[in-house]
Length: 59
Length: 448
Image 1 (cartoon, one colour):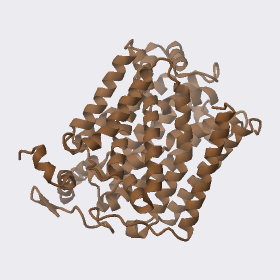
Image 2 (cartoon, chains in turn green, purple):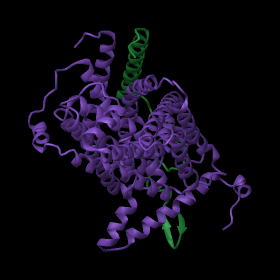
Image 3 (cartoon, each protein chain N blue to C red):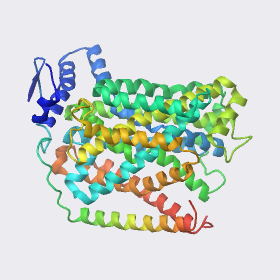
């Protein structure tokens, strides 16, 4: 809490994790893990397409 | 109170950052305490900013050029209704950044880095910074071309734009910076009177909603222009920018409703302006010219069809679009770097104390302005690289957004509702399919 111009301004509370605390790492399991693998596959496919596009002079 | 660098060399700069932000939060708290229509209106006007700024800055120089070329090439038949869908998509996505920023009070880069680790943190940061620098190049190109209509040499227009951008970021507090940026953003509305100057056939505009079809069939070039239009309506920097802006402004859970209204107003302005540009070029150029018009050709044709005033107004709009986007992109780079590396990360911070925060943004703008001035720089290739990075990065950035908005540990009861998850994942699916199809047309040019 900070007092500014006679008003109390709430700076930290309210957020489930206080903005002044370190942010804990998320548990990557279940569907979140599948999402990350999907993301990796998507990025890999897009990079391959970009390389093929560059090799063919399509850009 | 006199402050100097030596005092703050030993004081926690993060504490100073929170202290400076508390001034803005106190102003809002005072307005919440007042009753009556005018107090409510004033509160709304004070809280409006991040949403409108993000959406208007998204109508950047590249966006103006894309919308103008689309109107000239395809008329108003397909893309006017599709822009309204794109507006809905932009609202759904950007509203999530408001909640995420207001609840966690942390920027997007900090959230990705903190929750998902350094690999995805670096992936997002490098993509964002590279895309921001290259997008800044397109903004400075727009400024150069627009000011060129008034006979201003490129190096002068670039220098003035750069000076405004750097001055606003370095010298002003967040709130003043935001207000000045909003005034510049208001210049985006110049395209609305321009549309009326073209005397459009409103029956044709209405007909676009009734007979919505793909003009000329589904081809690779049509797919490219659909991607370009979606790419210009939702972009990775917007997620980072609006969330950081919400945090730097000091918005909290209590302000979410105002943030949503702010985002809705911004979306409305963005779509109205985008439609105005398409109706303008669709009316003036579609029937007689069509394909392969670059921005210089569009400006010349506007001069010939609706007179030099129309051409100059369009050029001014192009300059404004480039400038407001340059201001937003510069801040976005600084915020993202500050969040990733836990530097002080507020536009409220004095430059001498938070130079680490300011340097990346300013360096990105200087590099972009310099690239534009290099003779024979491969600007078309650079623009293509922006599209490629955005198409790879955008689904990833959206996925992180969705993961965070479903994370009860950080969002509490502000997690996404079912319709927001359905919309969000549908948007990601649409982007993946469109990007995949475009990638396939690169390998198999005769696919469609």
